[in-house]
Length: 615
Image 1 (cartoon, one colour):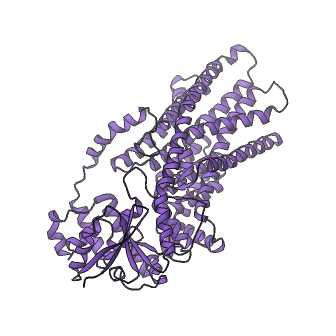
Image 2 (image 1 turned 30 degrees about the horizontal axis):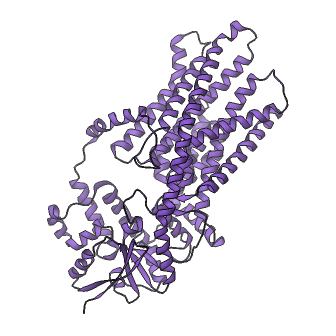
Image 3 (image 1 turned 135 degrees about the vertical axis):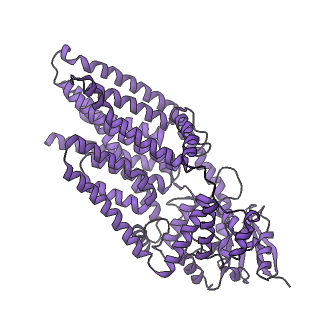
């Protein structure tokens, strides 16, 4: 028992130090970025940049965790608390997963070296094992660790929870799952089948029904409690109305699309929505128009759904299945961080792990006399895992929702489960081999050793190919984001230098100013300024929220955005190529004739417009 504790301590300390060093070194060599402008807006709401004081209603996250992070901002107002939260979640999860993986490798090697004694044997083996794990990590996930998006962070939390359940640290696993659910509920629900599969594996292996049901019950209770607290947090009439608006907006923009105006003019006339207001829906600047409220957005969403010509489930499966099979076997090298998307090297390592786990399982059940039973014992866990992953992959592909932040998340947790399956049987196999005393008894395990060497060669080869590629892509991505963001940094500086004015920015301009593969993001942890911003988007997912109303009120504006835009110290911001006819038409339909004049240019990319009543 004392030796086991010593081994665990060695493993935890070594892996923990390597994880911390990896986080620091990668941050120094590159930079931590929020992946999307959505992530930046979430941070701005939590930190007080949006409303002037930290706000617990983050909209995208469940209320309990948003509230806690907003409290941290109240205490540590000059710190990027949200960024630190995401980074800590990632690296704590990475520590848990890598600690198990390196521990399995180290234990297997140490068992085989049991009769060989040399100074510092255990320390050297454990350091080498941890290095192997972090080499593989560098071949797979450095981009996601540096370009941080809460979707992938949630996947890492769920993968870590799966490891903790396997190690029978159930309470800690439940905490991580609840934390993941509060951070992004939809992604957690996508990951939960993998977590429950580990619980099912444990149930079949150990037959402790009460324990497994208790763990499952605590997980479900935690999720329900989180939803209950979220419901209470958003129970005010204002937030209820906004939630209805937000859900309708999501249905329209993410699933059913905006019905074409000319083809559906009768419908738009029936809800009294003019073409100029329709243009606000198209360019996402619907925040200008108070008439586009929760009720009208719900009508548009319902109509959009009613006329949506979906391909149907069967047709969707027929379309997605060949692509799914192709993605299983496609080998290529990433050309950039996200687009064009590639599954390599994830699918390569997943395929290798399935093969490795299968061979280890077959050899570990070599003593089973019944061939059919031996094969079944070896494959049933892998079959269940592959069937489950296939269903989830088909689900996202049929729906057309498969960006790398989701697909790589699925790969990550699948690799984690394969490591758990293979690791458990590998240790069992090595323990059995260690007690064999003669060559005759040891013969079933000799092929396993040879195969292990073969797998190691493949892993080394894959790492040798993909680590340079991943680091090159990461360098190009960080440099590209840094260069692209310079224009936005100049724009932000312009806003701060004119703090007595209010700037209403076109939504798509706030995302990107040219189509070169980059969008607005923001460095994490550095140059933190959580003071109230004097810039408001004219639409987007936070538009018309009580938080936005608080922001405008704190800036001294209580009227509608339509009227605010005509104020003396209020300006509209767009990219340099945007035509302002849409804005003039909107005011004409409101029986207001306006003049739109070009007041200034910023960074050669943005135009500052003044909108005022025509004389």
